Image (cartoon, rainbow, N blue to C red; front, side, top):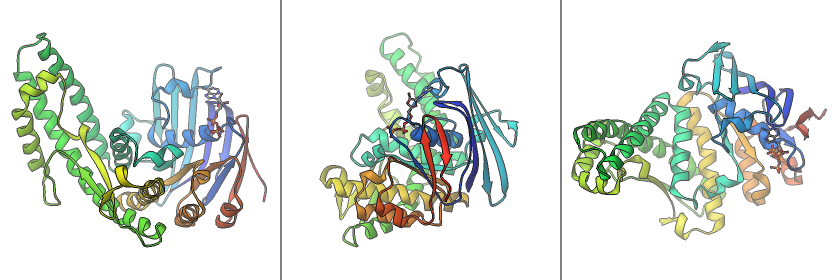
Length: 373
Ligand SMILES: Nc1ncnc2c1ncn2[C@@H]1O[C@H](COP(=O)(O)OP(=O)(O)OP(=O)(O)O)[C@@H](O)[C@H]1O
């Protein structure tokens, strides 16, 4: 898919900006604090209805304004889709084809984007919560079923944790409601766990291939889904549900004592194994970077396989973080395949040579101007 045009009104430091993007590589060049990341953030938000760097939507609204609007036109194989998002201090509204969507979950999936920023290089060495967030954000774009199950799971997890605390401190005594909440949590948790297992297996195929190439055929990458359940390719959602339910039954007293839910997908992780060793603990910084890059790039193909369309790729200042070999692989992998938005303070000679006919935009103080070829 291609984002052909974007209009920002009172979004961060953009007052009123219309841009027509190229289908290939769009390079956004500017000094620090001029609005490069803000532009990628706008595209990301138009895709997922939320920012990648804040949970507070109010921060997206220009300090002098009350409402921020992002709108754009997405060109897909099936035709053009106009999208619009509006952020006010009270909340947000989303429109597809000029029609307001009752739920944001109905909106997500119209524009798919993968964002790769320097902090993603810590996907491997960072905390497990980063990897769970990675799975949730990416798989939700590929499957509305995953989006729904993961969001229901979070709702019941909050309720169950609250109830476990009340039981712990004697504010509640009735364990029947706890059993009802455990049943719901196990049902949605099982859906999430089985889906993650399948998505990760597919992601592994592409990631392993890319990693093999980038490491100059020296390293084999494997992605292992670390979960408390016993899961393999044959495990059904019902079997996973029964396993979780049994765990909740057997650990009821322990969880009440803790005042929180100790079992389920909120504790899962991904282990990245290179040549049989966990890169998190044993990998060099270079291996960790190669792994993160391979996994991110593999998402492009996974998303294409799942949705039938390539996503947009947003690269926020990552070139400067990668050495020449990795830059070359990154730029080669995206050429002529995905519409790319790349921010940088200056384009290196290597990158300039590798990018096939880049369209260059200069960004200064919240204004973006296309550089004529
Ligand atoms: N809600 C807002 N209203 C107005 N201006 C804002 C708002 N939020 C952020 N800004 C301004 O946006 C600018 C930051 O832009 P951005 O994060 O896109 O920087 P950048 O060009 O990516 O720079 P760097 O290379 O340093 O990351 C800052 O000048 C900041 O003051």
